[in-house]
Image 1: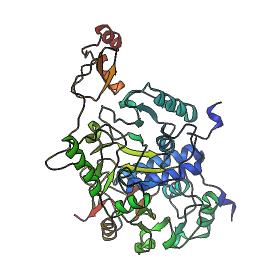
Image 2: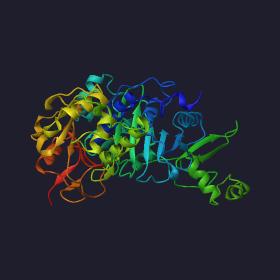
Image 3: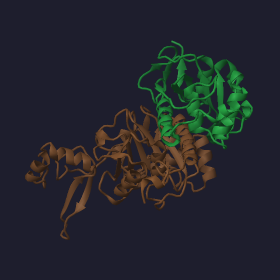
Image 4: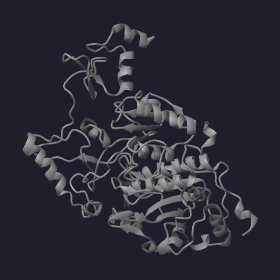
Amino acid sequence: MTAQDYNFAYLDEQTKRMIRRAILKGVAVPGYQVPFASREMPMPYGWGTGGVQVTAACLTPDDTLKVIDQGADDTTNAVSIRKFFQRTAAVAVTEATAEATIIQTRHRIPEAALTEGQILVYQVPIPEPLRFLEPRETETRKMHELEEYGLMHVKLYEDIARHGHIATAYAYPVKVEGRYVMDPSPIPRFDNPKLSDCPAIQLFGAGREQRIYALPPYTRVVSLDFEDHPFEASKAPHDCDLCGASDSYLDEVITDDEGGRMFVCSDTDFCRGRVAAGHIGRLGAPDLAQEAAE
Amino acid sequence: MTPQSLLGGFAHPSTDAAHAFRAALEVMARPGRIEDLPGAEPPEPLSVAAGGLILTLCDPTTPVHLAGAHDCAALRDWITFHTGAPLVCAEQAQFAIGTWAALTPVARFAIGQPDYPDRSATLIVEMDQLCAGGPRLTGPGIKGAVRLSLPEITAFADNAALFPLGFDCFLTAGVQVAGLPRSTRVEDC
C-alpha cells in the first residue's frame, strides 16, 4: 500500500478541521481540556492515538518529524509512528531534536532546549488530573469550573503524611497561568520545570479519553507543592554510564541476574550527541566515542 | 448561485489547509505575531487570509455569521459551496466575519459556558492593515510584551477579564493574519 491511497497525513479533511478547531480553543484557554471526536486510528488505544491525531492535524509537507517513546527514538512505539507518517504524509524524519519541527513524545521532554519553531505533541493516557480522586466526569468538570482543587492538595499532603515527602514521581500535577490544574501526561517530574516558559508550542492529545489541551509558548506552569515541602525535580543520583552526563534523566538497566545494573540517559539523541562530542561515562567504550566522532 | 462562487478554493485542499492551519496556530499561540495565510481567492469584500481561515476551519457543523458588508450574496454562496456552513445570526455563531464596526457590539457573541469555555465564538476581524504597534499585549504565548494594531482596547480588555470565558479573534488584512485569544491582557500604554 502506498501513501497515495490515503489523504495527506491519513486523516480526512473533515476530521482535521474538527481537531484543528479543538487545538485552537485549547491554545486560547491554556490547560483546559477541550473535548473532541477522537477517531479510530490504525493502532490500539494506549499507543498514542491522541498524539497521532494531533500530529496529523498539524503536519505540513515541509515539516521534519521526530518521534520519541520515553526519550528513545528507536523503541517500537516511536519507530511505528514515525513510519506511519513517513508513509501517509511523506514527511522528512529525524532523530536530532534540534532539526525537528514537530516532535511527538510519549512521556518525556527532550533534554535539548526546545526553540520557537517547534511543536511538542504529547501522547496522553488519562488527561484528567483529578480522575483518580473523583471518577465522575460531571464532578471533575464542576471542580475545574469552580477552581476547586483542594482535593489535589489533600492527595499531595497524604503523600507527605505517608512517605515523608511528595512521592508522586510522574504525571505530577501542575497549575497553568494560575487557573487550570493540568496533567502534564506521565512525564517524570524531572521534566516538569521544562513545561514552564517554553519557547515551543506544547499540544496534548488523549485519544481514548477524547481530549485535547495545550500550552502556548512562554506560559507560566507551576508544579503544585507546599511552602514547607517545595516541589523538587528528581532523578536517579548517578551519572550516565555511557556519556557521563550528570544533568539528564536516567533509565536504570538491569544487566545480569546478580544485581548488576547501569544508568543511561533516557534521551537517546542527547546521549549519542554527547558520546560523539567525546564524553565518556563509567561503562562507555572509548572506541565507541571515536567511531561516533568519525 | 453564480459560477464565480464555485471558484477560489484551495488549489491543493489538503496541504494548503495544513499550511493555513499552521499559520493560524502560530498566531493564536503567539499573540502579536503576524503571518501570511495565502491560497484562498474569496469574492470581495473577504480578504485572502479570512477566506483561508474559513476554508480551513469551517464545515457543516460550524454556524457562521456574516456581519455588515460581508453579508452579501456572493460571499454567502461562496461559503455555502466551499464549506456547507449554515449562515446564522450573531448569537448562534461559532465563527463571525466582518469589520470591527460591523461586529460590534461584541457582547452578542457566545463566550462559552463556565464548564465548557471552548463553546465560544471565534471572530474574524477584517482590518485595513496589521502592524506591530498600538496597545500593549501580555499573557500566555508572549515573551515579555508585544504591541499589535487593534481596532479597540476596551472590548478586548473586557473580554480578557472574562477568562476563562470569552471570544477569540483572528485579525486579517489582505494575506496577513494575527491572533488574539481571550487569554491575552490588553492595555493602553
